[in-house]
Amino acid sequence: MNRARKIATAISLAVLVVLVVGSFMTRKVMESLPFLHAQKAGLAVPQGIVDQRPWQTAERLAALAVSAEELQYAREAERLADHEVDQAFAQSLRQASSETTELKGDALALQRRVVELQQTLKDDQARIAALTPKAGAATTAAAGSSGAGGEDVDVAKAQMGLDQEELSDAQEDLALESGDQREKIQQELSAREAAMKKYEAQASGGGGQFAVVAAEQYNTLAGQISAWRAQRNRMQMIEQAETLAQADVAALTDDHARLGAGAQAADASAAAAKATGESSAARVKELQSMEEQRKILGILDDRLAAQQQLVTLYGRWRTQVEIQHKIVVHLMLRSLSWIAAIVLLTILAGWALQVALERISHDLRQRQMLRMVLNLGTQLIGLLLALLVVFGTPKQLPTILGLATAGLTVVFQDFILAFCGWFVLMRRKGIRVGDWVEIDGVGGEVVEVGLLRTTLLEMGNWTANGHPTGRRVSFLNGFAVHGKYFNFSTAGQWMWDEIKVSLPPGEQGYALIDKIREATVKATEEDAKMAEVEWKHVTHEEGSPQFSATPSIDMQPAGGGVDIVVRYVTRAGVRLETRNKLFKTVVEIMMGERVVSEKTEAGA
Image (cartoon, rainbow, N blue to C red):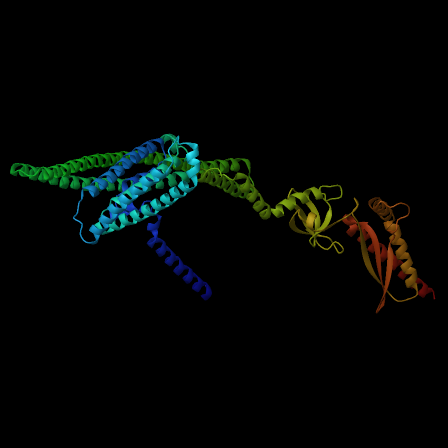
């Protein structure tokens, strides 16, 4: 590993560590019910005057229910939580109404101002009623006074709206100054009622499926693991909701005990006042206060009962989720069993195919190749089946098949071209076994034309000797589509060959050349005629051919005489035999000429 790669690795590792630490530190933002965790840590603060967390908990947990049983528990939890929050609002309003404080200073002035504005508002309403025409009044009288009367009514209504706004401002100022929470509680109650109407309108009426039926939809191992994790998180949230309900039960029990002790003290005080002869007005006030405390205690009893039912309900809900958890675990074990069975069958199938292969094939090299192919094939099939168990059948199957086909086309494009090239080679003017061809600069005799490959027995330079080298050369058939190859165009495999002869200087050289040419023409006359006929048939020419297969002789000056090159047509398969015959003929001609020359010199 060089220095640059080490630096890149170190930077990547540092970035990875920072991101993992940051992800761990911000993991709490993924919590679905953060107020439950805050309650568990003792940091929960109710939003608003009245605590509406029981309803918030039930509402958000209901959204997580998946089975029919869970939906039933969720609806019951929502009903109990809704009732408990309604009772909490009623208790808060009664407590705010029963708490009376002596107003002083600015608060007392604001109270007087509120009373005055209330009386003014009543006067405005009476004035509007007086100015409004009565039903059944005479048409003439109404028509005569419609102009002025209509304007007076509009003015009175505008004044009443102005007085109403002033009264609202004064009441808000008085509530702030005196600490009266009834107005805020009423606003929260109105907002809750509007939210409840919207929630009920949006609530779905589906009943869901039973737990066993709902669990069957997780037919893949990946889906089962995801459901298992979701159920575990849901169980934790339900446990936290149960803990919150238990804390509310404890708090309401303490409030009930405190208010009960206060009610007993008030009873004792009222008995003592009665014994001492307290006035009737004070006695009535005390009795009204005791009645209000009794009503608040009744509301507390109702809230306490609702919270206790919520505790029991959350426990039953958690038990139901635990049952569903066990069902998913069973499905996971079943999927893992399928994967184990697939692995075992893959191993056994590979072993059985190898045993069958050893009985069928006795060639060691072929057996090794087939063993590798069978092992790879069985392993790929086993892997595909295991992936189907884990992830199931892809939903976007056409798209996936299209992408897979495009990828396989790119990967196996050479084999596809080779397959197409086989059809080109199999046509009438293609390549056959026994042809002499040249492919990519390699010449030889065709020994096999396969579906994907063409095999040659490599030959040396056929213009020299054409002996086999003993090597088999294979080519993918794609060369027939995007490449080029050379093949003899006739059945006789005709080719031009040549021999080179050095003649001594002298006048008899020309006569010797003529004799060699005549001997060559005579020796190759039959082959030349056959070659011309076949070439004419191949080129589809009419009349006399434009080329001739007649042998030719080229002369080249040499230092000791003349070199002649004799070119002739012969079959590729017998070219060596033809060449040897011509050399023998040339040697005989030259020896005869030498004998004649010696006799002539001797006679002279």
